[in-house]
Picture 1 (cartoon, rainbow, N blue to C red):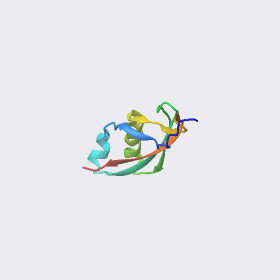
Picture 2: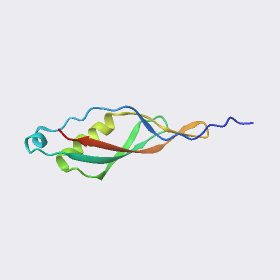
Picture 3: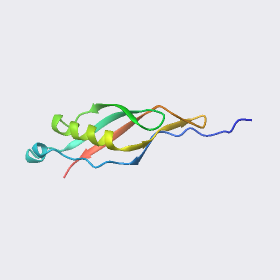
Picture 4: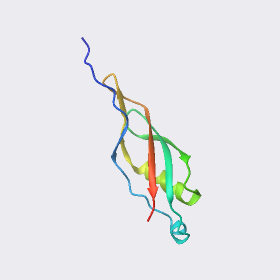
Length: 93
């Protein structure tokens, strides 16, 4: 009989800090970006895209943080699998 493992979603292991650009700080821009992070079976980021924009100056910082974050990929049938993680990146003072 095969081992039974419940599926687990992708998760953040260690969140990278957000480096807000000086121009955004000078313009007092703030907001929250939603980044779609596509992961391979090892938790490596293979693609990112902006689903909810906080503005061009902030979205680049959000994508950089999402790409620098460490993830655990989802599991299915006791094996890691490629997955998608939705990451909210909050950029407020």
